[in-house]
Image (cartoon, rainbow, N blue to C red; front, top):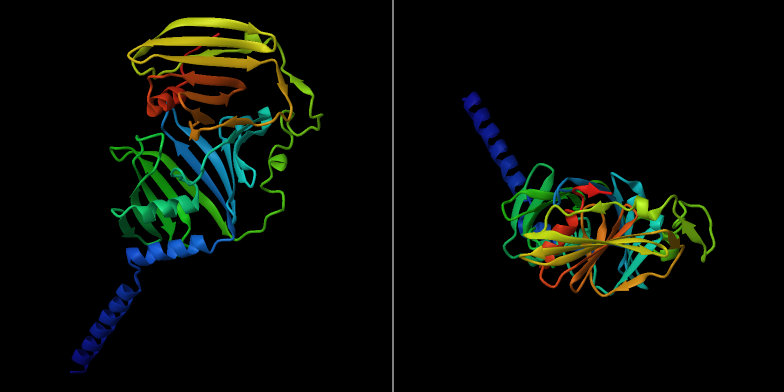
Amino acid sequence: MKKHNAFKVAFILVAVVGLLAACGEKSQEDVVAKLQETTEDLDGYKATAEMAMNTGSEEQTFAIDVWFQKDNKYRVKLENGMDQQESQIILKNDDGVFVLTPALDKSFKFQTEWPDNSSQPYLFQSLVTDVVNDPEATFESTDNHYVFKTKTNYQSNNNLPFQEVYFDKDAFTPAMVKVLDKDGNALVNVTFSNFELDPTFAEDDFSMEKNMEGAGNNGEESSATEDVEASGSVTDDLMVVYPQFTAGAENTSKREVEMEDGARVILTFEGEKNFTLVEEKKLTENVMSQPLEVNGEIINLGNTIGALEDNTLQWTFGGVDYTLASDELTKEEMIQVAQSVQGQVVK
């Protein structure tokens, strides 16, 4: 009889523990509310992540440092794993939105609503916004994460319509993001290794001047009007790079143009959809020049960040300026062409 009573007591205890555990599990609505509360109460954060992109012909890996301070200030540093000289910074402060390449002394100023105008897989607020704005978002609770599958909002790329977002169960901060294509393949993976809430910032951490320090000379001081001279002949150094994706067009002409301060090659492609690709390398660069103003979108091309304005996509990689122009390519096709400009090289 005592054994029977002991068994009943044990059974009741197990049932109660199970019930309490079930009661303690947060619902999708609870988690969404907590995520909104966390982002709304933020004074700032610093995050470190790695982003792997498989949207081009080969995988590109970035180390990412994200800083956010309330009053809408952002600093996102993307460091290319293949070439640290190609590191770029997306900066938002009271003066506007900028894309900086300090090592090359290049800067663009964008007339844009970034980051609110598109999904951003490495920004906390953007991820929470995507979760909140998708009434069809799915939800799963694992041992360590709350996982949402949501629609994305990439204005210039419909090839990445979904994402899986993993939030840490204790801190309610992003842990991992998988951006998916239409077939459910993860083409972009962001893995956060550190996330610090409400850190301390220096007064000038979000200034353009501080983030462009050492521009054009790898940290050595120089005059604001000094020209930095490249080594060797630019004509010899400029390598013609052909895109692997051409949207059904073929290269019909290649025109080389000698310039006073460098060299330019103009590639014309004709076929189903026509486009022109201009590749240019300059002999001299103006240190600390004013930002080039762009009324367009910030585009992550995998190996670099580009500027998409009307029918033109511009970017810089390996010290070469690229301009892709077409009245016939869609935005998605322009991005695909640009991402594939790492194919056969002819000197």
